[in-house]
Length: 358
Image (cartoon, rainbow, N blue to C red; front, side, top):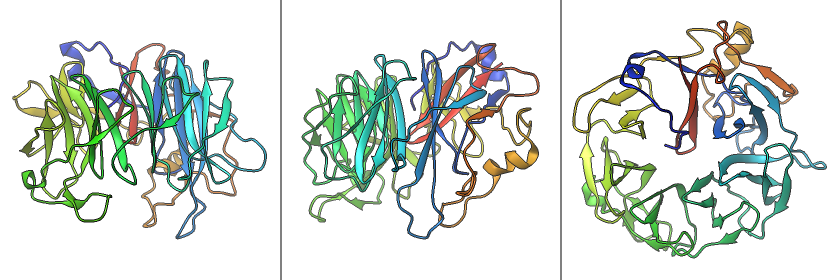
């Protein structure tokens, strides 16, 4: 989980937090990152076909977390597709594809953007972009890295396809997880560090020559001197490790992040918080837009994001024949926003939320 760390007192954990709406082109929602000047949200919509091309993407920016303004990203005839966003070290970065090529848009202020096409042959599959310990990582078929979001290079790693979905840093090393696990001391050269699949009893095949069984791992974060990663296997539980090599599997409920000294599970039907490292968990009260409608949208508009996803996962909040609005007002009836209350982003893998603490 990535977040803009809030200062939360004990009393805050008893409050009802608010899940703020995000400007989303798809019913699948949007991803959001925190920046010094507000928030940037990215979402994409498919064309509705059973074998869709990369989805068209839309970028919005907000100063208060409730009023959003579109950032123009179109250049020429080709639409920006499969976009992801990250911020770090004073640099704004958007990755995606355009016209069949991987592209990166970078900015120093979130308003004026420079775009470049990357010299990378693997443009058919893009993953998220992450900022971890002073580096950006573009987690597509290749593994690309950059310090400033402008100069990018492919990094050395042992697999023909990197297959990473998340990266974390702790105890002097980077850990990448996905179809396999990779370790690096400098973020430039990586080596394989398979998780022993006997820990959870359910293996997948690592993407090298199709013969090495390896346990996959999901979103990863570092807290209390250990890496924590969800299992891709059938067993319910989580992996943890001090170094990314010696792993322990703990069955049962597992956290997807660490917030202000507490382990939390913020994604799922009932958010949880661990009140102590080894203590019991309790439900975290979270107010969703479906239970308290924002004032800036009507019930019919709200249904765009509350509709169940279609079987092919291409259900759009704004269909292709509708133009995405230049601005969205997702404010609440009491006008509480991120300028009058504390807000922070929680992210697990590619899923993210913007939360407000009254």
